Image (cartoon, rainbow, N blue to C red):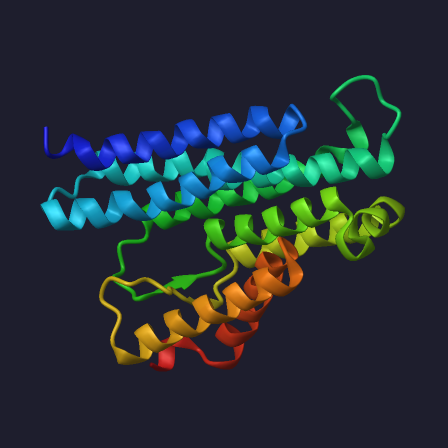
Amino acid sequence: MRQQIPNALTLANLFCGCCAVVLWLDGQPYFAAAFMAASFVLDYADGLVARALGVHSPMGRELDSLADVVSFGVVPGLMLYSLLVEALCPDNLWLWCWAAAPGFVLTTFAAYRLGRFNLDTTPRSYFIGLSTPACTVFVLGMALAAHDNAFGLGEFLRQNPWVTYGLVAVLSYLMVSHIPMHGLKVSGAGPAGWGRIAGFALVGGLLLWGLGPLGMSVVVVLYIVYSLLVSPVRE
């Protein structure tokens, strides 16, 4: 039974991801975002609990990636798809829009990244490529800001769908790239790691306060730039 506790948290992550899909399609983005927040917490908690209980298993590793494909693959793909629908098929009476389908390219690359992650047994304190949760945070912040038309972002993306296409391409590449990215994990973090985590938490809080949901996207951009400038491999 102890071994199933982390698995239950992983499956709860999957459940929340499924709920987020339906709520986003139902036009309730902030309720969808609340379920996504729960997915982030559960995705972190399952590993933390597994380590605390000493119950690592191949099943848990597989379930974790399967759940993440939905929560951090399908959901951000759907958000990008919705942004493209608003730009290219605003009068469509149906949910489907061929021109918006490339939004789900992000989902396919997320699945590839998660599959590759499962096969990588090299112990590291950092990620290779942009993690799927970080990618999802970026897309979620941008999609919520576009929904509210914060700073005119919604109107800008509706008039310039090529920007969304470009973001799909860039984010997809970053996820499967071999660029080292800081892990920002509490477990095993030394003094430098704790300082980095606290720094990003502070900056993220200030950006959320000043920019609203768009602050989530900005902090992910800063995280990517920081990882490029200060390689975690050299630490």
